[in-house]
Every structure is written in structure tokens, then in C-alpha cells.
Length: 407
Image (tube, rainbow, N blue to C red; front, side):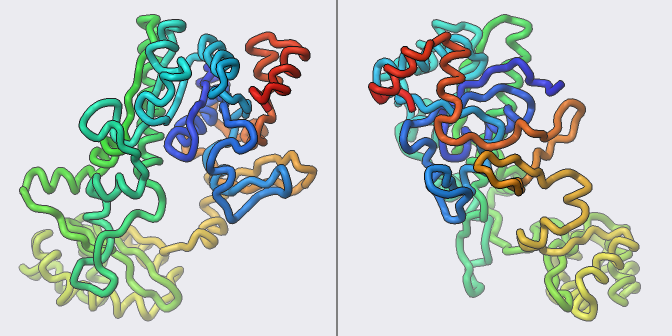
């Protein structure tokens, strides 16, 4: 049995950070009810191309990346009756996740104070750009802005003096994704604490806080040295070599983490004498002689081999390496299949061929992808949720639909 089976999550979030959190909770077995705006739903349903499906069932691939395993209830909580429905659902929920602006849900009676007063066991997680307090609390916070303000772009990209140099955002929304994972961890901790105390919790997650936290060693380097780390492109400030090299067909990444690996790399590249050379006796020596000695030697060696040949040679020697794949190449790597990291999701549009999506990286007993991992169409479960959770009958549902409260 999945570990969160029996936990009910009311998902009032949209776009990425909140949905990423609730998708992980769904992967772990929670029942996730995603409340969406009738007619349009989550913004990312429309963030294509590429698209999946046709006509009314057309949905952007972006939406599919972070909403598997959920039920969709289309409820307009901007209307009093809709807000009342959501409040009743929250009374039966274990967790609420939302990512509206600070105070944005209070006018609907859906803020943490009101919902937790009605349901003291409720765990209410808010995700915003800058948190619930502080001078920037009212600002909108998009991932790109947060990467810039949180230091990520200061260490990402080529050095200023090189062509194309300057700050660069990461290729995925790293602040959103990490915040979603941190929020999930906070929710799991709160569920554990509730077992002891019987009390829920209010969780305040900020993209800005998370981005600073995941600067990790770079932030620590700055705090200890008092100096900003430079942008280094694909090199590393402390580990050498730790970068891609051009093999005969495509780049291969080589990462040397200790003295033993350095000695093996030196031997492979035809320079066993480096081991006894005082210039390479320390890590600082490796860094100092990267450009003059190490990089040219490794480049010459790698250029004579294909990526597969170079990887096999490094693997035999015990030196970490790997090809620099494109996304299309990743899906054909046999290790992906062995780890069940591509999951076939059943379709409901009459097409037999399933959708292929990245799987859940958590490998533990009771957690496995299965037929409950498909994606909901907008409002697909509205009637089911309101009948099952709130006991509404057909006449009540029909009136709510006629009034535009649900869809």
C-alpha cells in the first residue's frame, strides 16, 4: 500500500511549484483533488506547444508534467456558492496547498486562519514568491526573477569576458521545482507531527527563501570567503577536471573527485608522471594547471574516441564520466528503462497508445507508478467529488452547473 493512502489533499494551486508538490503527494498515494477555474482551468493547460489531444481535450505538455494522479473539480470559488463548496471540501481535507498572492484567498474565506479554525487538523501550505511577510511579501515572484534575485544566475553561465558571457537562468524552473519539493517535505513532517499532537499546521514557503537555500556550497563559499564566486560555465571552483570534453561524436563529461581518480586519469591521458609532480600534489595545483596542462591533455585524448569508447575507458579506470545527452537521447538509454523512469500513462481519448512521461524517482516499498497516474481532463471529477465528499444530489449539481458555479 502506498504510504499516503487515506490522506486527502485539496489542491488550490496552479502553474508549477504547487502542482509539483501535490503531484509528489499523489505519487505517494494521497488523494489529490485539484480545484480549477471552470472553462479555462490551470493556466498551464494552455502553455503549448507541444500539445496532447484534440479539441476540448487538447492540453499542453507542460500541464502533463506536474498534474498526474489527481482529480479535477471545476469550481468557481469567486462566487459565494463556489467558495462555500471549497470550504466544505477543506473541512474534510488533511492538506490544503495554495499559491495565490499573500491574502488573495482571504476574500473568499479560504485563508489559513478561517479554514484551520473550522478544521484544526488541517495542514495549510502557502507557496508564494517572497513569503507571507517581509518587505517583498506583496510582490509577484516568478521563477526567472527569483533565480536572478536569489543568486542562481550569478553563478550560471559563461564568464563575463567570454563570448556569450553573463548571467544565465537554469534551463528548468529550478526555484519552482525545489520549492515544491521543500513544501512536500514540510507537509510530510506536519503529518507526522499531527499524529503526536492532533494539530495541523500552517506552512509558509517562499521561492526566494528556497533559491537562497539551494545555493548550497556556492552560498557557503561566499559567506566564508566574503567574495562572490565567479560564473565558470561548465567548470567547477573546487574540483578539476569537472567539465565536458569534445569526443569524436559528442561531448563527454569527466569528473575527477579524488587523488586516486586523478592518478587514473593521468595514466589514461598518457601522463603518469603527473602523480609524482609537485605541481599536481594538491587540489589547488590541479586548479592552477587546468588550462596549461590538464585540459589540453584530456581534450586530445577524448577527441580520438567516441563518447561510448571514452565512457567505457573511464568506467574501467574508475573515473566518473558520462555523455552529455539531449532530451531525445535520454529516453533511449537502457538505464532509464531499468530504473522504470519512463512511465506509460493510460489515455482516455480513445487512443490506445499511452502517453510516455518521466516517472517518480522515489524508489521505496509501496511506491510505484500504475494506472492511477493518468492526468485529469478539466472538470472530469467535479460531480464525483461533490457527490462523494459533500453528498450533493443530481438536482443540486444541475443547479450549480446552471448558475456557472461548477463545470
